[in-house]
Image: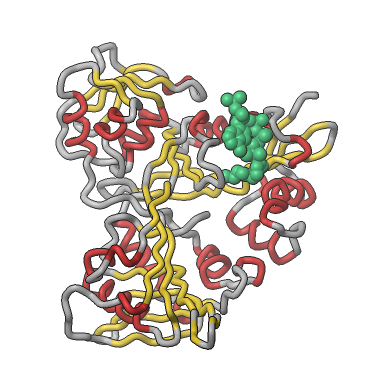
Length: 407
Ligand SMILES: CC(C)(COP(=O)(O)OP(=O)(O)OC[C@H]1O[C@@H](n2cnc3c(N)ncnc32)[C@H](O)[C@@H]1OP(=O)(O)O)[C@@H](O)C(=O)NCCC(=O)NCCS
């Protein structure tokens, strides 16, 4: 039986394609409201469906994102999401056919990058995606919430409704994007539909509603946090949690104030937060960072859809030439030797410094994983002496990439 993959063209097709993943999350078919929300960020032609025997058996979508890369540039990036195959049609190559169609489409659109979060981390390497950032969860008992250095509190934290928060949050997010690779620009409807909206089906058991706070200094909003109370009791005492959804601020002072506020909320026995980068300031602010029990996971996965364009769009520490020999079994147009010189990549016949597969180059691209680390894991071969050290100097970024939201 042959599988056919093409973009969806009607509400019915779109709904069936999204059900490819929605069923695994226990969600019903799309309501009017959810369909309208999707339409604001994921048009039909970016949501592919796979058909067999005239019926939809899977779906794969991609948001038209723009991703921050080292040096501060913002690069068009397909934000791959809503990928799923009906359980009745698994392991027949449906996913492979959808990845083929999607990456060809992204390439034709001229988007040099594609990025995703994985449900299972063993799936996407074969399509040229590599782990590009690490992130993790914390769970900090309140009795260990002290900071290593006392400080004088300044400014104030104000509890607001989502409508007011959304007037300030995009500016703070944008400011962070200038510094952190790996963040995607949230389209305007994303803020209201996904960040502020709080539909029941997106809550975990025991979750209270989203609360929004703004941190202000001299009437200037310098940070925000979104969190939930998760009340619970055990043996007569509160075992409640403060669950931090997102906490971002414009500078280290505001970050410290915001986290002090979050860690001090009464009634909570524990503060939990997810998707924090390993270099988040919180760890060195805390007197006992080990008590946060950071559990590191793979974060954003990246694919260089167009190696030449992608390499030419980030910046480097120096312009010294380096040659990569890239093997890209899934996107053959990237195969071959690429010379990077003065920040511009072009094809070359010169001998390579490093030999590697497309997923390894993607892992190094945002500066979160070094070529040395990749070589130590047999993902990169050093062909010319000092190739690894040279590449690592060029690609080094001052901060770890961070994508604060799973999409
Ligand atoms: C994961 C999923 C999309 C795979 O779809 P599928 O149509 O069965 O996959 P295919 O038959 O095209 O297999 C493609 C390749 O991936 C491998 N693969 C598929 N599912 C895998 C899994 N869960 N873990 C590891 N490898 C997997 C296959 O062995 C095959 O490998 P090969 O190309 O080396 O032969 C599907 O099982 C699914 O929808 N799962 C639940 C939702 C989910 O995880 N979605 C992904 C969101 S990030």
